[in-house]
Length: 252
Image (tube, rainbow, N blue to C red):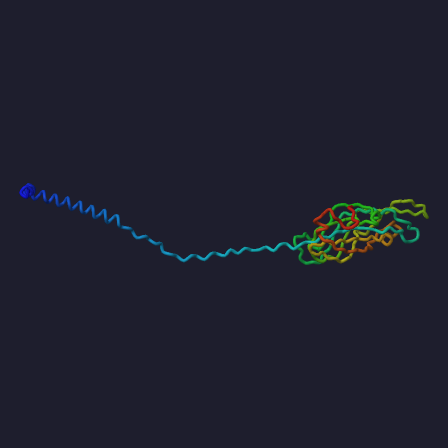
C-alpha cells in the first residue's frame, strides 16, 4: 500500500504541484475573506451636536376692549294749564314738528363718535310731529341715542313748524288755530347733564306752556322756558331689552 501511494504521487509533475498549491491558496483566501466580512461592523457615524436655537418669543399685542357706552333718552311732557294774561284764554292744542335734536358735549375726546367741530351731536334727524298737550300724564319719547360717556351742556330742538289752538269764550274764540312763532326755529334748553357707562340718561323736557306762550301784535310766540329733569336708567332695562321703556313713556 505504501508503495502504491508513492507511485501515485510520483505520477504528478512539479507543474501539477504548483497548480494544486495555487488552487488551495485561492480557497483559503476566499474562506478568510468570507469569515472576516461576516464579523465586520462599520462604525456608526454620529452627527455633531449643535446647540438648540432659543425659541423666539412672539409678542401679542392685546387690544383693550372698548369702554362701555351710555345713552340719552329725550322725552317731552306738559301740565295742562290755562294761559296767563288778559284775553289769552286756554290752549287746547299745541302742535309741533321737530326735525332735529342735538346735544352739546364738553368732553374733549369721544371715542367712535361723529362729533361736529362745534361739539354738537345729532341724536335725532327726521320729522316727529306731536300735540304737546296730549302728554300731561305720559311722556313722549322724542329721541334716543347711544353716546360716549362724558359731560354735556345743552339740548337743541330744531322746529320746522308749530301752531296753537286757542279757546276763549270771552272773545268768542272757539278752538281757533294760530301759527306759533319760534325765534330762529330753535328751542334751546341750557341744562348740563352727564352720560355714564352702561347708563341711560333720561331727560324729560317739561314744557311750561303758560309761561312759554305770549301774545304780540304779530300773533303768538313760543319762548324757550323749560325745566329739564334728569334720571338714570340702566342700559339693560332701556337699551338691551327694547321692550321696556321709561315709566309712562309713549312713542311719538
